[in-house]
Image (cartoon, rainbow, N blue to C red; front, side, top):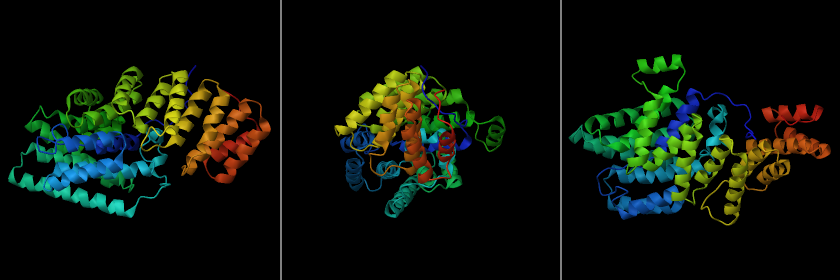
Length: 407
């Protein structure tokens, strides 16, 4: 049975750019300096904590590394990465399911950004940039310094796009990150970590509509989807620093290309390496559903929720898994399980109102599917009462007139 996938808009320039920012910002690249993750025990520990979403612990580790290496732009980038992504996770900006449409471009953030965190992000970004550029003044061909500056620009792009919603400023920084890392590869073609950001940009620009692609090429930003995927595969397999980030991005792009078998292989590997990462566990369930493995997806979502109840994840957004369970189960015509998933959403704290409204609508539809009309009507009225000006409210009003019918 096919998975339940509501109609979605095609991926646009904005969505592709947000993919770029999420992935480029997640990178924690270093070079042959003392703070390199695969050579420095504290940095390696901090990275492991980061990828298991233990942000507070990773921040403490990276703060210690920075004290030992105060003039190292890579050490600053480590800390900046954890600070940025801890806050993006808190405000709910890291779920890939959010970017299936364009609404994120204008949607007001439910959880406002902490001004103190924003100030720290800008301070760390400036510090890392200044340190890298001081090295570049001494040697314009310093590949490590160029690489470090490109990472800082990628991180700042992520922040200005996802937290500040300053899209054009984010784009400028993203382009700067690409140019820095392309220069790194010109200087040293074996600097495979640089292929992560360059690969992302190639895939993004290669995926744009023809007219936009022409405009991008005029600006010197050509690209090839195949080259992008090849670069990401190389980085995922061989990059000592940005390999994990290449895997995250590769899985996302493979999902878009409907190469589900390869995407699942990548995500399952990440899940084994970082079993306490809620985002990876949830993405595995998302992928199973998208690939048409609906029953397996239902089981995966249920396992994510069970692990949440066992305190398996340091941080989590269980409402997202509960909603995913509802979506996957309805695709299998398991209406009671779907109803249970949707209704679990409201039992968690600090749920985004839009997700809550979507879950309430889904619950009403499942009740209609099971011929429990009176209960369904209550849910539809609740949807309208929550916010009457949304597409979900329009759907609810339609179902108040005529019951939802299973496709």
